[in-house]
Length: 508
Image: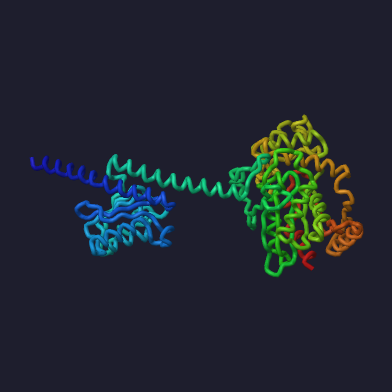
């Protein structure tokens, strides 16, 4: 009989204990709601004395009070101590909607609190067992019992869900607000698309540069331009503007950028994504993509970032745009270093190949599909650019992963610039664009580069900018096999020694 009575008593005591937790935890939740309404992280706390009476209430108020210690627990402890007229809160319980931090755990230990009951664990900063547990330190002269709500029955689960939902909703709203502010500062026009950041995830393109955006250039008309910016050692005097070709974006200069950054002569490096490419906004209409407009954007970027007598390193059609920008930039460009990028894209079949490629999720998928046909030029949708068969295995072995070329075009809606630039290259190859462009005669050695620059300068003496054009051969750079590959990236065409020789020359 005594045994039955004992078990019944314990059960009733446990039920009473659970019921006794309900009112103060609900009160803590109300405090958390007050914090949320005030724009604070929604955490609430109450303190109950040994008889179960609430003697202290508090909610987060660090922002409102300009006080880093104004956590919910601290606020409630202060009120309870004032009520009792003693900083020691012997026999008291503290109810908190979220697992306490280290500061609050220390305060409760110092106050000699008997129990701490919290609704939701905090896996990142929790100091009641999730990360650290000062309550379990046996060397302290006081031990406080910790009771997670998970061990207090079904009703406690309801408290935990309510507290967790309040926290999740608060941070979800904060993220939405941050996104709205970001979009307000970088508005997206209705006639343009923006490639989601998720398309670039996992590429591991660790360029030693800061990723920047600008929408302030007049020629952008509200579009957002992305560019990388890096600085060389102190004392450098040479500015560099690196312009990608087609297809491509700033990621193709990852290694080159790092090599330039290490050169003593380098002052600053800009690597933009042309509008319609990379992380820049992408107008939906091919008609937007006129070379003169892109050149004007580059001129305005040079002025905004105050590049002085910059050297433009341009690949393929990027070099043509760089030359046009140099002619418009009132002396901001001192020389253009042209990198080869295979043959231009002169045929409708090759433009169709680009469009087909852009629609595929991964570049390597398109290349393998083409390779599986068994021979080049099997049809308009798989006609090989330049009449040669791209090697998928070769692409995968390069500095950039195969996804890097396809990443900026997640679907057909992003293809306008991708397709339009093929037409630019066709016009350029016909001689109707880039008129007056004189290629420097191939020379070798540093003496050769000086001769090439001088020769080119004389050929452009009548030009408004007088911008010399430098062929890689002028620096003793022999074009690699990748130079005839339309998929070749700048990192495939240059070595660190090539970049060092050029940087040393322009640094004089």
